[in-house]
Length: 189
Image 1 (tube, helix red, strand yellow):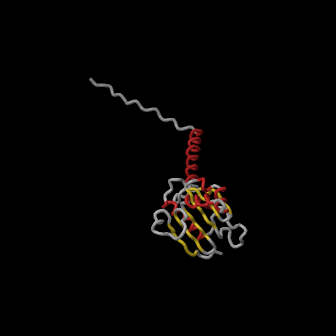
Image 2 (cartoon, one colour; image 1 turned 45 degrees about the horizontal axis):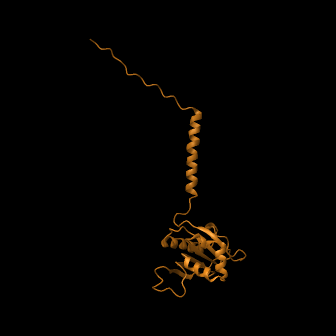
Image 3 (tube, helix red, strand yellow; image 1 turned 180 degrees about the vertical axis):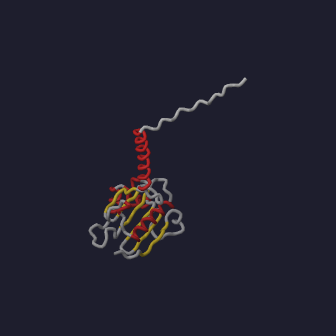
């Protein structure tokens, strides 16, 4: 006998998406695209460790970096300060207020940046006590707690890793404190 030929059932045609649904999906994915693009364009500089300005008094600036920041990362941050000091002397984008605002020659002619991994040493009252030099314990503790230093004058700059030690660098202090650079900087208009 001949078997009847049966046709496979035809799938129902998919109904196209409603215009409102299409619009909602475009808004959803467009929003994610805008958020991602904004985050990408405004991302912090990943070549230097994260830091925050703890306090600033006159030409002295205290900076705080996370406790796990290595000496190599602190050296990278000091190198960035050096680059800015040599090229533009505009530390505003690095969140540092002008250190010589009344100077007609430049707003950042002189500065000393102290880098700490413990945020208490970067506080305004500690920086003030250190600069005043009246409290010997604070002064010595400040110098021991220091993890890095960048100093800029009209004509010279200096970069150091580790605490400030009395006297010249030696083999005994090289393990924890050393000078990275010291020398003249190019003149700026």
